[in-house]
Structure formats: structure tokens, C-alpha cells
Length: 172
Image (cartoon, rainbow, N blue to C red):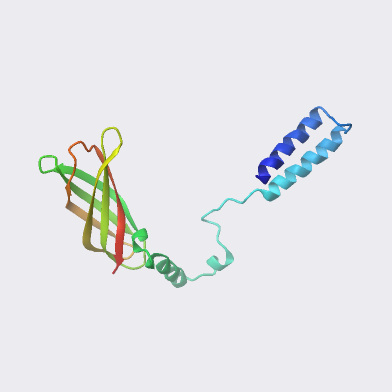
């Protein structure tokens, strides 16, 4: 909000340079505009960048980084898993969903027994059905696991697209 007000005041000062008002001269408005410009530079938030590290992060050893990452995923291991490749097809006379997927583990520890949830859409893009299955397998630390021909169960015959996500997992 402050930045918006300063920007507005800056443009008023610029207008005052073009057409002075209230008995002030152009140089007064120029000084006001310059001062407001500097204030805008000061109060503008700095963009967050992944490449900029604080001194404490730069001084951290690889072992400390791995420990910090393990702590981050320890309480909720499902956040370490990502579905990186997904192919699905209809089987059983178009009523059964068959899935091939690749699961990537970003954690420094293995994760097992994860839940895969697929939400299905019709031709209009409306979510219309979903299936959830638990995969009783282990995804190695910082590795991937390929799931082939997994039967996700019955699905509506009108399904034209599907998206899948990990909704639960257990640290191995």
C-alpha cells in the first residue's frame, strides 16, 4: 500500500514539473519527485531468489543440508514424492483404469506404502470421478520407482483425462 501511495505521489510531482501549481516552482517538484523515487527504491521488497543464500546456508556442510532436508520431509513424507510420468488407459471394456507411473523421491530416506489418487475429468473438463490405491512398494532415497499396469479400479466410461497425485506415504 505504501508503495502505491509513493508511486501516486511521484506522478503528482512529475505533473507539477510539467505544470507547476500552488505557487511552487518546477525545481521544487523535481526535488520532490527525486526524493519520492529514492523512497520507492528503498521500500520496494527484494525478490526471493533460490540462488541467493544466507551466510548460514552457505556455511552449511552437505551432511548438515541432508539432515535439514530429512527433518523437512520426516513429518510428512508424502511431500517428498512426485508423480513425474503418468500414462493411463482404459481396460476391462472401458470400465477399469490401468496406470503406468514414475514416482520420484526427493528425500534422503526411502519411502514406502504411498497412496496414489487419480481424479478423472469428462470432455467438458469437469471432475467427475476418482480412484485411490495404496502402492505397497518402496521408493529409494533420492530415487525413482516405476509402477506398471496398476489396476486403479472402476472408472466412469465418460472419462477423457485424469491427473494423479500422492496423498499419503510412510517413511521406510
